[in-house]
Image (tube, rainbow, N blue to C red):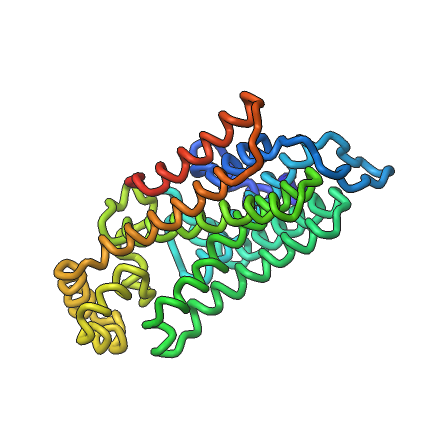
Length: 322
């Protein structure tokens, strides 16, 4: 799906899908497991599939298409984010904008989004199209929220969690929901799939925020402290600020000054910021696991194994070091 006619665009679009830099493939893994986890007796017939064209009729391959679309949207957002952040590395290699320039990186992201749209349209399910179109809007909203904050918003945990939902959790939660809709599941089951994705996504990002302070550059795939150096205030600092209100003045002064970064880190070290962020991540991981436990019971061995794997993932997300 990511193959293009024009050679330059082709190599740009394929850049992060190549062997060795394909990333963790975290989202497709979750989505393929979720497809099996939702393999329940269907209460109503799956939505009718219009014939004509190269319509995929088999449910599993239609659900797999969602995993492919999700990964394309995700990579497109990485390409665009790297341009906005002026990043020079990604996944341990030169970022696309660094290697091929901003213009091509923007166009490659646009190309991946357009290919995702074509694939999405081929599923011929308007509800699913709406869900994933909304995700793209959310990615833009979240990135904009991050760029244009008032000082009150920068220091607000609520604002931060909303932005995190838009930037990180919306994609996986709505994709999980799309799988349930394609399978013709009830609104209740679709909602549980959504809740799993949402809470897993939030937990994932909260741990990312911790690793930005505690992780090593090599295992994180990006330079440590990159958030704070970019002036992005994340959960650990927000929690530290609750304990040490004087930290707020430092945050408001900005982190262009390296001394402010050091001061903030000093306060963070004295605070329970890291611990509280881990606890919040754990809360969301537990909510994700609870959503899986609430799915209608199944005797099918494959279904049970997939559900166990989804629950195991909630622990892996919390305990990972990279």
